[in-house]
Image (cartoon, rainbow, N blue to C red):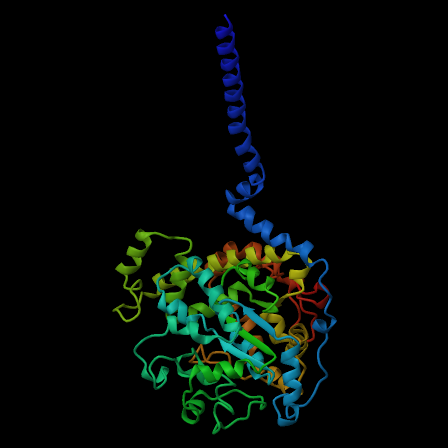
Length: 484
């Protein structure tokens, strides 16, 4: 009898231990998982994770000190009183030591971004690069624009840090002038449009240059090529580090949100200037230079129409081949189809950027400036001062005169659409009215209506009460609207 009771007690103890062990197995995982539930939910929704990552910065930036100097321009000086002069080299060193400013000019093709970038190129306190991401797009053609956005951002980060070694990844192998004597490093000849860069085409990189760095005026590409032999990119990197402001202009980054990680980086101190233009004028300009823009229009359009079927269509017409392979020009009507489709994608990107900027927190709005091409060419001096004030650059009387002269030329139709020259920019604002058919205007307005509305571009038939006067008008993009 006693043995039976003992076995029963042991059985009860065993059953109790089994129950406790089972409860422990059930409770411990739930406790451990409970702490990660929030991260798991966010991880399953990448867009939510991205949004939370962006907008949580508002709290982080709440204690950010206001930099009054960002909104103040330096006193106006003459063109001959450059910070690059021997008497002011110590001032440059102090400015660089304080805080280096980086500016990205965010634009798209045929919006007047070359003119806007040239204003920075002419400023003696600016190190300027013209469309360096062109190399990446050429090397990775026919990759669609969307899939290249992350690579563009990473390239931009390296270039802003004056690290040009990233260009070796995308440099074509065939040009011996683009490589230094050791054949491992690139020279300045590897850079897109290097012949018009004021730093490359002036001392100290080019001792025999016809112009000094602080002389305001266009660089003749043939004169630079003749007087300035290519130098190693290491020397250009050293020059880049001397300047207090680094500006990069490009047209291939289609999403403002891609730049948020760079805007968050306190080591970069990045600001963005986004340039817009009436999409009807953009379309007119794109049609004038259709063959030069066809390849990149296809890359933009492939963002919407991905897949092998679309790629096979391009190959069938000889425009989907890689660089160096044979291709043939498309008929005008077919190339217009690609240009129009790409413009629709661009207008969608504009709308996304505009809505993103409108809903951005205060810290991001302080680092973003919206500018319309029409306002820039109608009031070049006023808009230039606004631009310089945002960029922390001093005003220059010679640069004021340069901006005015470049927009008051005698011609608009030039044989070289990608060549920057003085022209009647006011005529360029309205040229689309005479050159586009009613059907073309209707197509552009239908595709770009939301973005046009936010940018205050009136549709056809609405200009009567919205169209500003040619001279002396208050631009639709006003100072009262602030950075946005």
